[in-house]
Length: 139
View 1: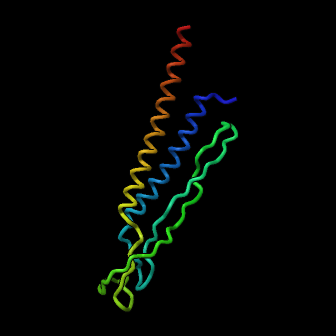
View 2: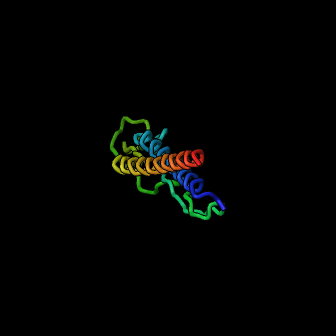
View 3: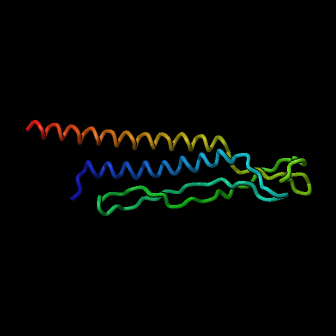
């Protein structure tokens, strides 16, 4: 049987890993929010999404989070009239990425808070282990 303190550390670690991936994808979306296609009429950067899944960790006997998939958002691209742009089609329209900065900022904030919660869990577990060791030394 696994120690509950070790189990909580491993579960929090899985949460940290998942939210770290989410933050990476959000930052990639923000960095490419203005990335148009390279040639006339080509598609621009498509927003990426992260899907999580709950997976049973048999060693812990508990559900843990994993990144299931990094997908592409199928929302339509924005179109803007900019005939001087090298990515403009024959009518002068340029396709812009389907990245909505408000959604990305909300996702970033949520991922950051989840990351911080998992980090706090790791700190609490470490503190409890240190307290247990101190108690055992004194006995």
